[in-house]
Length: 42
Image 1: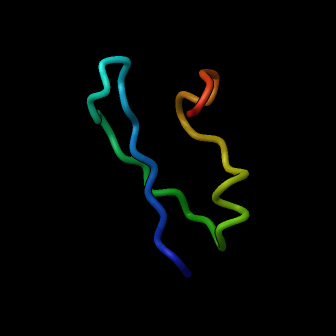
Image 2: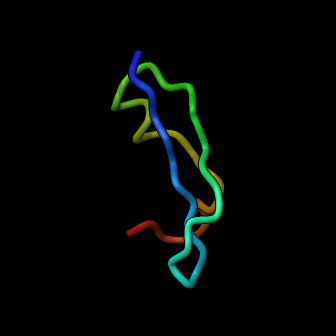
Image 3: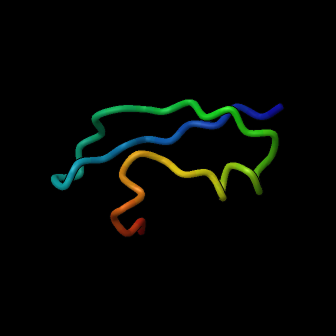
């Protein structure tokens, strides 16, 4: 199983947290919902 990390970035471009989701593969990780998803990801 791969280890995934999601880095959360504030509006000023500073990293403020990291989330370690439990995903079986790349496809599942890409479909997962993360904090801040209500805003558009670039």
